[in-house]
Image (cartoon, rainbow, N blue to C red; front, side):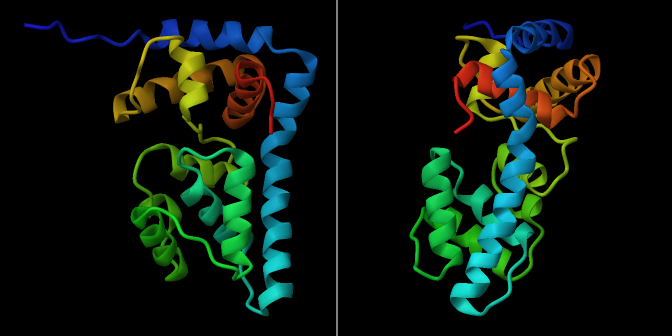
Length: 191
């Protein structure tokens, strides 16, 4: 019988993320600190562009929901392009599940309640200014677990969120800011 793999402790993941955060260059700290506020402002600009193009008012929270919906396995540039196209009414096709989520957003559903998976609700929160949530994307999981393949289960989400929150407190940062700084350090760019 195969032995079930056990996860590291919160203390171990905290120590790993602490090392990544300490190793982040000044440029990564600056880029990570600005990432969510700047991209939250981008959500506002896209909402304004959409209103100008279509005459239909939409909120930056709606735009952030569209961005979060399209964020599965997409680069940031592709994600923004797809979301902008959708909001400007130029059309965009996506996976059926994503399009179903977008249709629910159009019916005023609360984004974190409709997204499948554990990453995108937190991503929406971060893009709308709630920096207490931790976006556990593939890059943050790599930072937390290294080369070990780990799926984002509720247990992993809770573990990584707690560890990130602890490191954030040590650096007097919001958890999402710490996640973004580590993301920039691990990935090598904030774009």
